[in-house]
Image 1 (cartoon, rainbow over the protein chains, first blue to last red):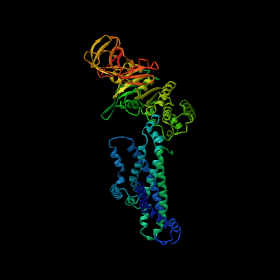
Image 2 (cartoon, rainbow over the protein chains, first blue to last red):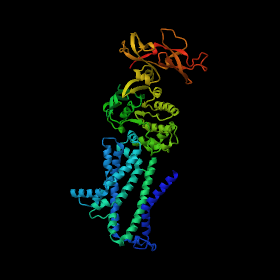
Image 3 (tube, rainbow over the protein chains, first blue to last red):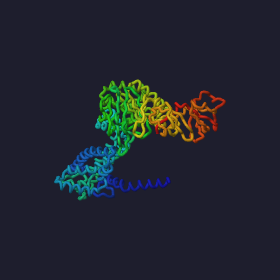
Image 4 (cartoon, helix red, strand yellow):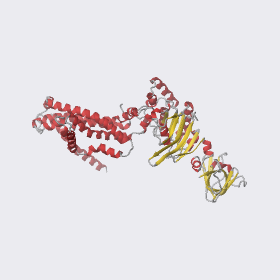
Length: 265
Length: 367
């Protein structure tokens, strides 16, 4: 039994490692390779692709666009997502399951369809494509993400805590501010990080609704058409991979630590 | 009744098709320790929540010092709750938990610090200020929950089975502490429990509930000695119940024919209007009111029956005999252990005995 478990664990690590981490490691390693082609032999260590990346205003603009869009999307998604989580986890009412399904639906709709649907929708309404259509589109899949993560935390905590806060003199908003929010804060912060990442990384949906806006994934997509760009993309991607992994790790730590009833607010 | 602290008038609450609370009314005086007692699911916690403002009744009113507060939100009521599971804020220290109410009311921090310190001292929790609820034992959490609800001196404190989750010893100790605190603070307590001994021990008055209704309100002695019906007699303390039908009514007493046992004389604690020959009733006799002996008692002055000792349960202060009557009924008898060795004529297993009691101790109750 023990041996089987060990073998299973080994295969799991091996498969995940080979399929996911190895390509990323190769990407990072070759971003320091002094060659235009992404292959052996190793031509020597260099930082020139990073230097080149620093000198691409189109890249900077794309990253900046993605960053501010992701920031706005995160804020909107957190507000709407926490409210939705509250409705999903807190109250019993007719149609609660329906509501939960409604909120979670964008999770299971293929993003290609979501992108096409949003494009048709904006077109029919006569909304010109812009950064704001991107933001609205990202919000559609980030809200359910936040809602699900936060609802999981809300399910764990005693609903009588809010009743106790009300009883001791809180308005509903104060009860949320002083009791609920501090307790769910780890999950909210974690959800915010995930939401930010999802928005920053989103390509498929963004592709349909971006108009003339170039976000970072769109920039990568278009830059890929010229092989001379490859090493630069590689270098930028390496930085982003490291930053995002760090953030996700932080989010996971926060999410787990939150179980003990700690909080920071 | 204008000096009543709290009045509940015709309170009704339905959940879906089920009526949890049905036309409940009672009045609680200032500084009274009022118990709502009943089996789980009888609606007592629902009543508490409606008084506290956590539930809105479907009908009826709640008055606090004569003011209608039925639809006021909980934060507007000068009523605090000690929750069954304590509901302490897990992200706050003991100090912050207790200071929560005063801070909402805008007390200066100096005054909060003084008052919290004083209360912790009363509750033997000095030095616990910076601990978190999860670091406390059940009894300690209970005390913190109580202090948190008490510190702002509400008009009424609602306690929802506050000792339910604790060990017997701690429970008994906290029962005394609660009574003392209630005396010291002059706060009206409404205390919900399903534990009849707790209600008898603590309550100034008790409301006995079943299936959403209040069956009887009275002080512990009248609830115990003069129950209004079979359920109350059965639910409060121990009792022996005989089912029978009325044969005749003579003055204060009535004669009830109990199949297999014979005729029992008894009294109706709440009026004799309904006692007519042929009416089926229950006769309740408390175990401590029954005598047990090998020799027959004088005829006439006693209700009596013969049987065999089936079981003896020695309890230290008292001994419980379980006697199987010849007709098949089982009767429980409590006797005080006045002597250490039980005497040379001590009753033992399988003895033929008489059990007998005064007619005044046979309570004839409607079913």
